[in-house]
Length: 137
Image 1: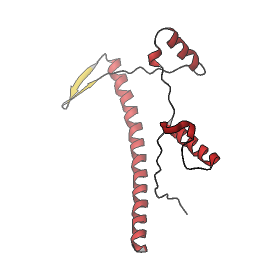
Image 2: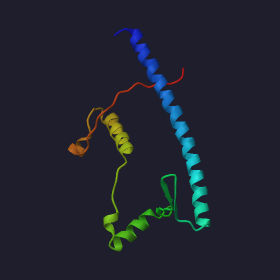
Image 3: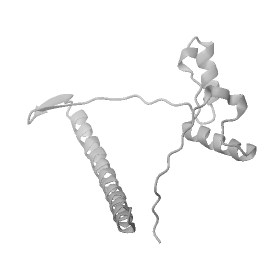
Image 4: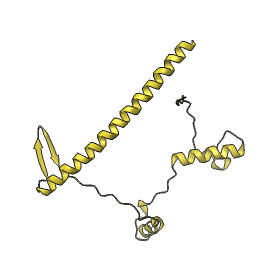
């Protein structure tokens, strides 16, 4: 393959990354506008005691979500309370994928090998992805 072709692909890849970055910024700004207008409309509907209406072929209605999380610094207490009261099935142990990958990488460097530590055996699957990085010069 000629250098010209490689340079053309590199230029095209850079342009696509820049376009994606611009679109993500536009989507973020649009999301903020949507959130603000959604709040205004839901407040207006609540104020006028209107829980649903139809307009231009669409039905608009009020909906709500409940979000719950442990109080800061009390996660362990919350888990213990759930378990003690018969709700242990709600509690799960997890390992963040990025944290696990960083741990495996660190172990490889310490052990000087390319494998998962022997004590983890066949419990962890790894693969590597190679891509092209771009930064401003």
